[in-house]
Length: 221
Image (cartoon, rainbow, N blue to C red; front, top):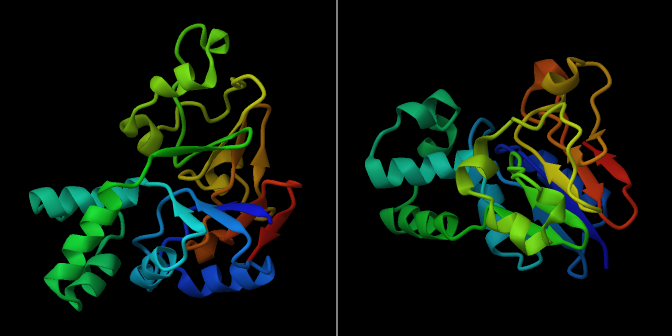
């Protein structure tokens, strides 16, 4: 059994399937997705349907999933559409209201972080309280909130780390972290691993990246 993590698939269903083929993903493996499977790309609901139908694929909430739930609750499309939500919304409109309601309930229940072995998986980042390295992992996680986990970029370029845990994030494309559109690959720092390689941004040489948690092998589509 192998454990893999990807992030920010953003409707790129064909790249998603190609990645599963590349890593020879099977029913014995586990895949963790760090949010933002929706919006921008052409086939967001196909990705969600695939995840729902595979119990060994685990989705963590991203800010794009949260924008959908805000739209469902409040009816406002402006923020969601400004961030590429029209692609998802148009697909939802082709289905019935029961689908939209069940999708809302599914996303609303999603966690905003998971701990897998010595990895803390979250969409955007974590909050480091005072004396955080004196805390147990349970205490450290009790300080986390959904807003930070879905949106924060405050630790990018920071050297902070939590004990022997690695914090794995998506949300911020690596192209904008290192200002490099040519050598697009996962970024490793002392405390963090950034795996969003901007797969929906073709002009930025975007790729879907996958990291194997067992041996740190990297895969790209």
